[in-house]
Image 1: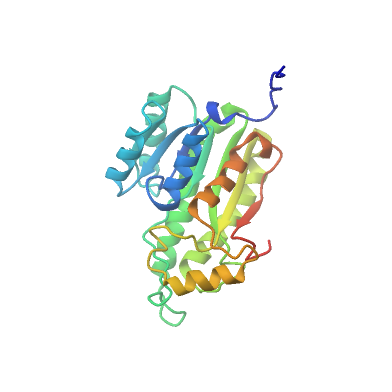
Image 2: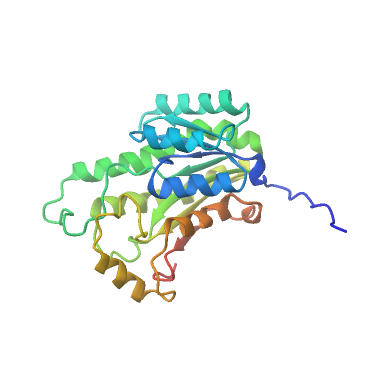
Length: 264
């Protein structure tokens, strides 16, 4: 006879979660969105310039997904996103995934080098990774606290530990996001909100990594213990862990998901 499941204190099952995935319509964001939907969560598919993809994804999951346009760098637009979430699901946001990436392509041949990169490139990446994440967390904060087990998952990179390709602006912004992850975890922990980061390497393949030569993918695969390049779907599964009841005692951490290429 099957025994009833014992409720886990300080956690929310996926079927009771309302998740906001920024940049959730394409690439890695789409894989994260689909992973949460697969587990029964309700998901807000945030987009900025991917209206068609977001709308189609939401339409495939009626009643459990909505597409909401918002530039995460603009606080008023993020506030509207949260309001639309309430209107659609009549429930507070329990989980936030800060995935949005501002106009960046992983193309090592075309990247600006140290002697030529201007600070405006750094500022653009900081506006997406830091300003965007802070806007979303703060806008959702009352909801996350109300849930009693709020979860924030930030998307990072292994490049600030292993800058195999020195993308100066992108890497600096993600390093700063790790700092925000840890300081926000310390500040929000008493409100029962956990803040963590999942950091990947090059993923095979997303819109951002589409410009990467096949030889680079092969070289990275050969350098990993698993002899493969991590996929967006594998990365998304790790995001699910931090949103799951099994991570209810974990906060302020950075999990590197790259097939073992980098030890954290």
